Length: 164
Image (tube, rainbow, N blue to C red; front, side, top):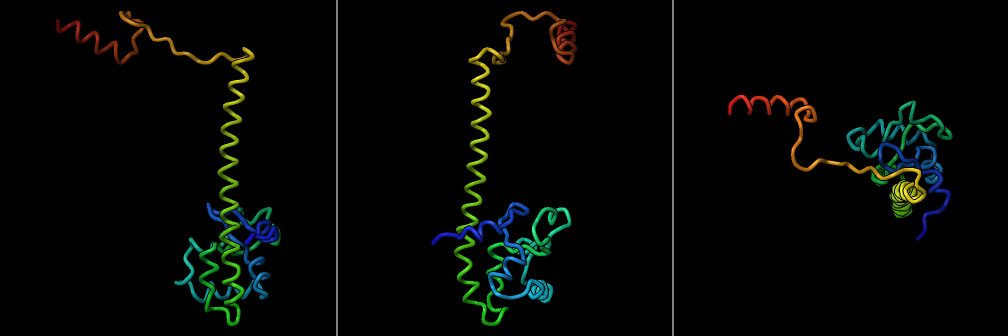
């Protein structure tokens, strides 16, 4: 089973979770978005903040149709039994949501790995071209003069000398 491009295009990444906006979920279920809002308000004990997000104004910026709610996969599953005659649609949507969430997270992980590799490659190219030499810390071996010691070590060294 493959997650359709329509579903992937509608998913949001909100608060470190893949979530489906209320308008998109309503379209997939063939109902109005305000019905979802009414259900969530009527059953607050059922819909925890981790499963259904009430989006803040800054989270809504730049999102088409400016949704009020965003449902995670678990939030969609909690709708089973609350919408009469829609259980089949909800249960059919759940595996597609799971696959889409998996695709989103694997894409994010891959993007982070590629970014890290690009940084390392850039440093290597600069080192090979001689633009930037790798940083080497030179630490003296053996005797270190008082004026080369860090301030807090100087005090300890002076106290030790006074005692002997």
